Amino acid sequence: MARNDAFNINDNLGDNMNLLSEKKHLNNILKSKRANIYYLEYCKVLQNGGRVEYLTQEKDKQAYYNIPIANTTVVLLGNGTSITQAAVRMLASAGVMIGFCGGGGSPLFAGNEVEFVSPQSEYRPTEYVQKWLSFWFKPEKRLEVAKHFQNIRLENIKRIWSNCDFYQNAGIYTDDQEIEAVLNRFEKDINNAASVQNLLEIEGRTTKGIYKYIARTVNYGEFSRDEKKSDPANIFLNHGNYLAYGLAATALWTLGIPHSFAVMHGKTRRGALVFDVADLFKDAVVLPTAFICAQEGYTNQAFREKLMDMIVDEYEILEGMIESIKEVCNKFGEEII
Image 1 (tube, helix red, strand yellow):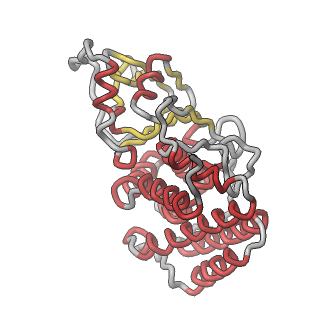
Image 2 (image 1 turned 90 degrees about the vertical axis):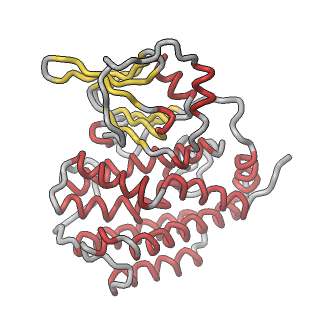
């Protein structure tokens, strides 16, 4: 799955391209404005003549397709993939996040883990990590930030659902009595939460209410969320969530904030902040899109293409994540030096 057309290796590849001059060129596109996310299966990712490409076996011949790294945010590598050191070096030079996951974007090693390889640089910005760390070691401040994140999550649901024809054509409206009650209770409970654990319980209850509303509204039938189940809605939720995780990891890397400093999800888990940030938009975009596409019989690829249209073109989710993180840093943080 990708957001660009492929081409054959027979094109002139420009073998004399210099990596340093290319890196200078790659910096021209802001991370928040890049248009491509790739999910790849059963292929080899390699460097070829100054480009990063993926090699596939198509019937009786091999085919090479370009990955335009200057306009790419995340590459997710699923089953049957390999990647060369040279390709990783070029992806890192372009600031592309590399994620390893299982088939269809579902996790490879455990039910709720994903592994990302972050580009390394001594020149990552320090402004936002300093502000983040200035409040992170204070439990009461972390709770305030966690509440603020949940309020952003709630506002995103209301804003996007209220302006999305795709959802409204499926009967999804924020002023329906059932979901309005769920969201109103969520807003009230967020502000009254006494601890992060309490907030996690509130989040879990709210998410179940949203699942119930969406499943009923699109006539999906009985549903229970289980990442290991093979019904279309669960499969599409797995696909979509891991696209959101890739964007969240990219947003944090762009601002120089390590993935370890979570405010809600388990603070003993190295990548937990990725889940915190992904949640800002998962319920607003991934969840309803997954159910609608599952009910309408979309293929895996068709679902991902639809979701990517919404993530990149309609709602600019990566930019929204970056701006939300910056908002939190500026509101709750302070310069350390």
